[in-house]
Length: 251
Image 1 (cartoon, one colour):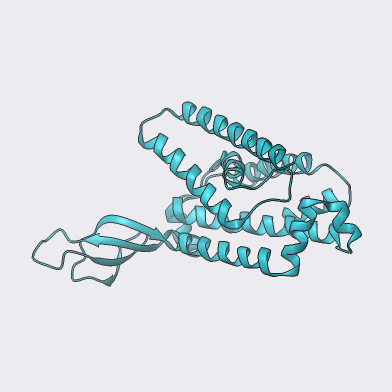
Image 2 (tube, rainbow, N blue to C red):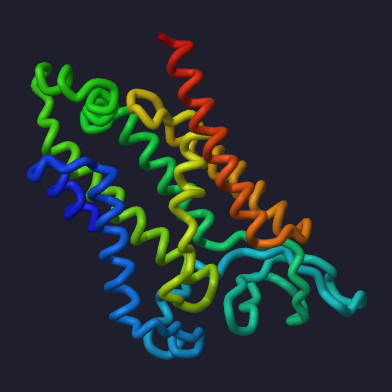
């Protein structure tokens, strides 16, 4: 999907926002058609494609119910019985858990940070975001680089979907429907400019953590779903307004 977006933007000279909005709607429809609007249960995934759930497993801090045995340790968790990593009891009371998906996202962020800051491709991406015309005059293959950026974005989306399946434990054709808005809010809060030329992986990760804590906090506080959506919409408007203000101040 990412490469298709890149080809439509570069070769057909279509506006990126319209292209991505259109392909989003197209693939949403194809997803509902292919799945017949039905979810895939955890037991079916375990039977036919257990690898999809791997990112849902992880390392958890646990403690025993029986005080006569060791009262703490690490266990490898999953959707079945916990597999003991080191612990003298099979009794498991989850205290805190980090899934393998968290570690893989940290690795992915580190790789992207290195690529964007220490490779020619990363410098080309920054140059195109700052001024595509100047980048073209300096000899950068703007079209080819843009297609590669869209392709990488598509691969990252697929990787994120894999992690999400492991986290939820099932597959739903309507899951994470609002994640696009949260993603935009996160990167803008993290310092990425919607007009290009400014942004960082570390800032985006911090922005995602801020948005995640904000949304989770509203949920834990018992705020109704529609008010959560209202607050998320206000947050993205505030973030974009702040980006505009910073852009004007820098000029």
